[in-house]
Image 1 (cartoon, one colour):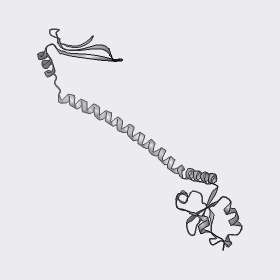
Image 2 (image 1 turned 90 degrees about the vertical axis):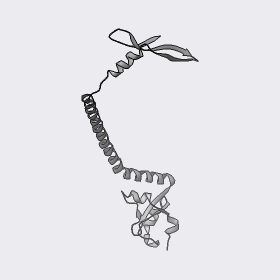
Image 3 (image 1 turned 60 degrees about the vertical axis):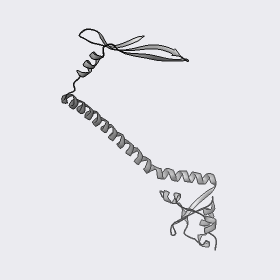
Image 4 (image 1 turned 45 degrees about the vertical axis):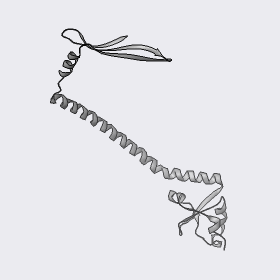
Length: 169
């Protein structure tokens, strides 16, 4: 058994004793404990002797303020770093999103074109625009163009089925 005791410095008698006994029960190791008050009056007297002055509380407040100030500085630094990372992600995100949409279209075997006059985006089978370019005047919409660079809003907006909206005159 291991004991932890609080000793009265005047007469060297134990005021309080906490005993630990290592035990092995149901396949698990644990500590059983036993608390004993040898001299409860001395324990109460000892606890009553603690005094905390305004100086102590001021010191605690000062220490905590300093700690929280350091925590706030670290938090501010992390917030600034996070803002830099987020700004970088947002600025390159549009280009990366467009590349992802283009890759998706190539896998699906489609292409998108847009009408700058009507602000509509149309989807066709891959290669359709090459045929359209040969004579755009033969179609009901003659102003179709490849999707512009940097306009992720067009890729993420409504995409119309080109065969239903664009046809030869």
